[in-house]
Image (cartoon, rainbow, N blue to C red; front, side, top):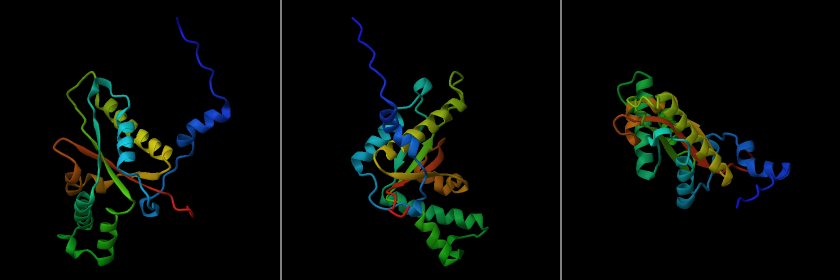
Length: 190
């Protein structure tokens, strides 16, 4: 015997259910404050990010939570990127303020995650654009879940994420650093 379909929630209940997606806005890493998600909440965020459409079950996305050691390696890699972007042979040649600013980018926000993509070009039934859509869906699910837990954040990519020293911190061979995700709490003045 079939079950009766449940009545849809009313407009107010629907709005409350969808609130994390209707109200989410990006908050830059320098504005995020403690607390950030704890280990159990990060596990839930990663589970939400993994539970997306994945044609062919290729799992083209993995998300890496940066610990203190990885943040230190990112800080050094951000310095290498900043020097290269300015045509300098070494990070030691950077202005002291630039060095401080670049290092800080690895420690801004209580939580830093790396969204890593591995796109298979040899699977004709799952073309690369579908795999990238899955990576994007993982990012969206992660940010929506973080908002549902009461956190704010922002995804950032750009030339820094493409620099070889930066990519090497979280990526293996054949992987791409799609973006960073910074998470924390929005300050009361924000």
